[in-house]
Each structure stands twice: as structure tokens, then as C-alpha cells.
Image 1 (spheres, rainbow, N blue to C red):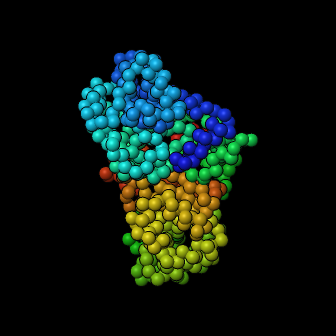
Image 2: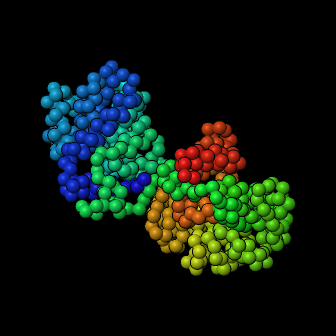
Image 3: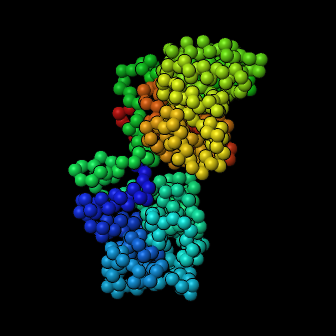
Length: 528
């Protein structure tokens, strides 16, 4: 599903109006009706319900007037509070305000402090609140209506936000001041970027994306004869998107058809990382998985793994891989479809040299994680020298080391940094963390909203590394393989959290849930 900025959505609205001839008041009517329909499902008996609609002076307020009308017509008791003077409402919003008043319905103005007492009394009796104060064009800090927002949030009443919670910025998902904490947000045509970012979750609640009749030639980015459509390449990873990418199995295949994964990982005391990555690759559908580890931990890995082949590699006195392992790694990689490199490798001169030489001589796609990324800090020019596809799966600390920025700088601009570096380095990047961001060298960007805080546990990233390699082995291109893996990885974490809770969640719990989420995906996709 495409993600848009406030400006992009505004341009689509204008295209629908000017190029396709759809009156703005029709779009407003459709928007308000869809919100009213949701509100009706949230209330047990609409005819005995009290609903408050808080409306601003712009089109968001106009949507609120439409919502009020439809709810009133269905039997609800509706109070409309207007956060401005009547004569400041213009255009299509004024049309719908006038309709409401011609129906004999009152409008309560809340542009003075004394009006707050009326708001508080109304909230006591309310069964639900509709927030239509500020729309997607809002930026900055709400000041005049701050007491109203605080009263709504303190009321304990369920809140439905129209298009975006008032006080939230549509492009960044930030709330710089008071902000409505909605239980449901109904957004129109396409989700706005800020609504799906992690910092917006406390305010958005459950997100509903509804159709308001904007032509698909505009929203799909594949316009017909009129206009130029939506040309952005930002997406929310969804169940449907992953199903579209899902590797097909017709029934005539053998294990060789599903690819060969080579995992090079582990060091003394870090055998678990290697085992998790290799097992995840196998669980993700790869036909054959082979794990290479330092000789000193080979017996441990072999004892832990049944379905994965293992082999020992030369090691240093510190129990990490030696540079003398290079020739065998490259030989084995030449007979594989993808290489996963990095989990638990450790650090040191041999590791740094080994990672560099592997990349310079590699002829197959590669997934780099953990210590392989740390070995490349200050050497990112190597990425451009690598011929096959590269996937990087850093957490914010590793991304900070690669870019020379601080973790705070990375976290403050996760989308921008990931997109910039994916293009600059010519790689696919999955910046892990809440709301993992996946970006490709073609400027396509995906945002993930599966997963939970319990997944911030040792080994979680090793599982993701193996999953990405497993999907690439089955024939997916690097970018969709990474985006699909991130989404499913989060689903597995969510399933594990439901079963075990978040506080005690372990990477192994997530690994156990991979077959569950994969089975559900296959059942939804009968062509698998």
C-alpha cells in the first residue's frame, strides 16, 4: 500500500477535482460518510448514543459536519463544537456547516476559555468523540485548542480521529505539543507516512484506510489519460504485498529448486548466532542450507543442527575465523545462491580483512549483518565495488558506525538516512528497530508495522538475516525478499509475544513461530 505525504495527498485531491471533475464537496461527503459508518459500528445502539464532534475551520472540520449530519440522521444525539468563529469557515466546509444549521442543529463555539466548561460537561455525557479539528496540513504546536485536546484525552471516552489525530504531523508522525490520543483513525484514500511511524502509535490507535472515490489512476501511480498520478515509491508492507511476492510451489519441485544458502557466522562463545541464522534460512523455505563456522565451535553447531549441513573453517587463537578461511568460503559460495555473512563473527584484524576480501571476490548475492557490518565501518566505498546484490541489516548502532553519524541522528531521520544510503551505496538496507525501514538503490522504500518491543532480544537480528537469505535463495529479488522477511519476522515476534508475553521473549520463541506465520500465509495464498 502506497504511503503519501500531506503535500502528495493534497495534490491528488486537487487532481481529482480539477482533472477528473469530481467536486470537492463530493469527496468531503464520501469521507464523512465513511467515518460515520465506522462510528456506527463502534456504538452498541446509535439511537441512544451521545456523540461529540469537534470541528475546525478547514476541510477536516467540513468532514466533521458531514459526520454529524449522518449520525444525527441515524438517530444519534450529536453536539458540534466549532474551534473558530462562524465567519471563518469557508468553501466546502461552509456548505456542510450551513446544511447542519439548516437542519435546526446548534453549533457550540469554543474559542474562549469559558467555553471549556461546556466541553467538559458534554464529555461527561458523551459515548464517543469525533476529532475533526486539524487535518494533515497541520505542523507545529497546538496552543489555543490545547485545553480541549487535554480534556478529550482525560475524558476516557473513545475517540475517532478524522484523517489524522489533531496535533500529529502527517509527514513525521511527531507530536510537538498536545495531541489527540485516538482509539481509531480513519484516513482517506492512502495512509500518510506519519501515521505508520512508531512514534505515532500512541496517538493513531487502529488505522482504517477508506476509499472516498478518488480515481485509482491517481492513487495507484498508474494514471490513465488524465493527470500524472502518484509517482512516489513509498509503501507500507502489508499482508497482500507479501502474498504477491510469495515463492510459488507447483508440486513438481525438488529441494534444488528452492535454492542453496551458505551462512558464514559464529565465533567462540557465539555459536548461537550462527545456529539461529542457519535455522531461520531453512525455516524460510530454502532447499539446502550450509553453515560454516570456526573449527573450535563446529561440534557445537553440528550437535544443535539436524536439517542444516555444517563444516569447520580455520580459526585464529581468539576463536574467530582466520583470513585463511577465505578460499574455502569463496569456493562454497560459488556453489550457493546466496551468502549470509556476519552473525556472531566477532571482531579483529582477520575478520575485517576476511569480510573485505569476501565482498571483493563474491559473485553471488550477500546478506550482511552484525559483525560483518562493524568490520566495514569507515570502508563503505567497498559497497560500490561489489558486483552482486548486497543486503545490509543494521540496527541503529551499526548504522551509526557505517555512516559516521550518532545514533540520535539516525533515529531522528530513519527514513531519510536509510533511503539516502541505499542509493549512495547501491545496496538494500533494512534499518531495524520499531518500524523497520527497508530501502533499495532504486529509491523504493518500505515501512513495516509488525513486531513488538519484546523482539529487542539477542538473536532476533540473526533470524532476520537467515530469513532474507532464505527468500533470496528461492528466487526473490533482494528488495522484496528483505521487505517480506521483515514483515514475517515481525509477525512471528507478535505471535510469540501473544503466547509467551513480551518481557520474557527469546529469539528461539520467534523462530518457533515462523512455521505458524508461514502456514497462515500459504493458506491465504492458494497458489503457493
